[in-house]
Length: 70
Image (cartoon, rainbow, N blue to C red; front, side, top):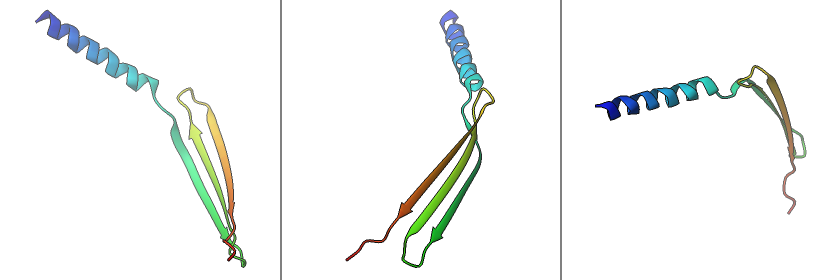
């Protein structure tokens, strides 16, 4: 019986630790895709995340893809 109580207490402590640690939360995400007349695709992606400590991280990615030439 004592071992079951100890196991239950250990699981409760570990479960609470995961809740307190948290993880980053995505606040917003936007994606802008433009296609030029020559077939070139330009993609811009902006992501804003909030970290567990309250800081905000902004990430911006740009990607350009040109069509294959025969």
